[in-house]
Image (cartoon, rainbow, N blue to C red; front, side, top):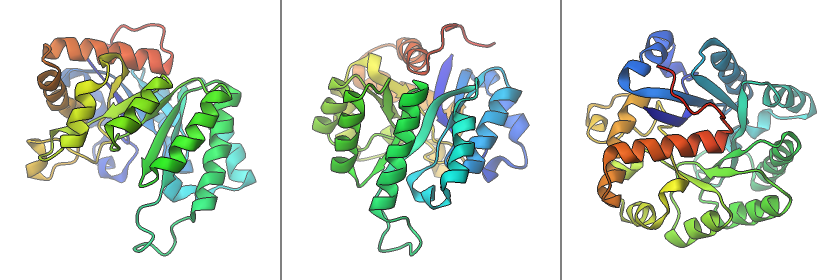
Length: 269
């Protein structure tokens, strides 16, 4: 069975058939998922989904592009959601420096850093791992994560990893995980392929980021992504590593259970 560690089934792309899609995942070989909050509403909805389905856990956090919605009042609600028994991690949180030449209302870098640090503090307080979003912000993200690690951060995954092999090595040296998804199947992904090739198997987490980043060959049909399509990512990792696909599934399942602190590692079937 596959453990999809990063989904957004709260997204409006699933408004017409959300229950059908989620309940059908197990028939597609998916045993567990973590639904990730990107906004305060997304965090609420993620916890709601985790309460509704026994094979779903939640992560509560606010994406760097959305931190303008945070203030002391809304952050207090986020803290309550983060402390919920069905919330396994804080995320997705981090820094995103892409698009300042495109989006007029994008939060400035200092505002992003402030709320990134506040949410890391929350993770430290609750002793929960974090799901990190980092785009065009490699140096600042690394500096902040090194400090958080020194302060006792439980664990982290760098979601949709896209930086260099050297940067990956630094995160792996801190004991963190890298999230690998559909991008690995895209043509020309030499940098990511080299990272997967060299990194230890016990630090890979499978993720879709659905409805986004649909893998090849499904991508050509412009379909929204689904956890069941992680089978293509498994195949690609197996090819790169020279290992059986079943071995990849088992290892990444155990990795995800370890990361999210799940004691019962059995799949819900």
